[in-house]
Amino acid sequence: MKCANCSRDAFYIYQITKQKEILYCGKHLPNFLEPRRKAGLLKTTEQLKVERESAIAVLNADEPTDEVQAPKPKRKKKAAEEPSEE
Image 1 (spheres, rainbow, N blue to C red):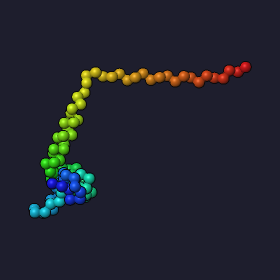
Image 2: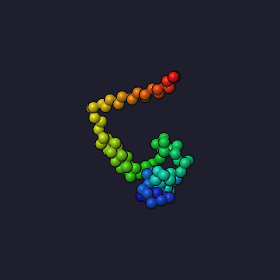
Image 3: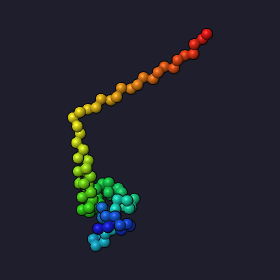
Image 4: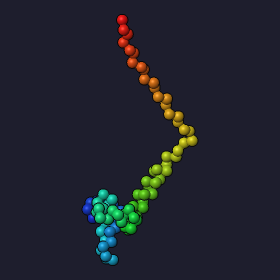
């Protein structure tokens, strides 16, 4: 299923009536539908679920290590030498 405005996969379904729906990708979702999206009230496609699972898998692949790297000590700035009075 493709977006109504481009050739990307559709993630959201705007159900106008029981028979009429419009599909949108994340980029072309109209602003008036954003509150519904944020509230979880918009229907979503299977492609969005696949994309989310893929992203979660990528994020979970980087397992944190037990070693904690200590921060590098900061260098002290050399004090400016005062001109000598002769």
